[in-house]
Image (cartoon, rainbow, N blue to C red; front, side):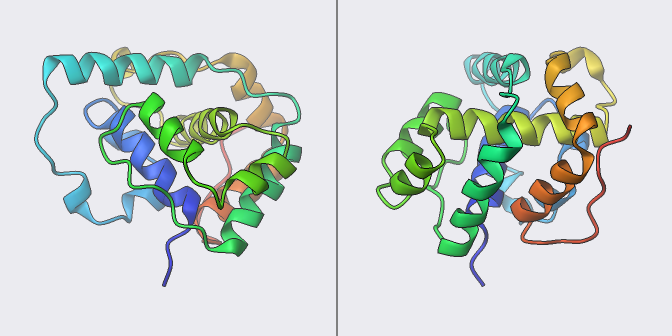
Length: 181
């Protein structure tokens, strides 16, 4: 069975961003992934600083108003095309973006959705992190950067679209819950 592109890409990016900061806040679909990916050596001080920087970048990123209109069809096409994501464990956000840009089979899908690889990675990562934190607020909120309030409002005001995108990302799991209102 082929794992969906987004589940793996989001898992890799979120793992890199959240390895030491938000294990309780991870999306349930990501928690089902093999634990060997999560039990790697603790990051160095420099890696922790880079992870924190990436988490802050994602938390501040503002999703466009038309996020769901653009991202949902892109995600459906990626899932239907069975495109495998680049292997990006422990990579920075910028490295993940570069790897995504280097995927020729993804280029026409992103072009049709009028988005760049950067917009795709930043959008889907921001969406995933925002939805995860809204569903499972971090127990140690001091280590989590504050979420962009516009993104929280966007997800809260589009609960059906949020749920639909979560289901696409998770391969259609119906056990997922929409963010709290």
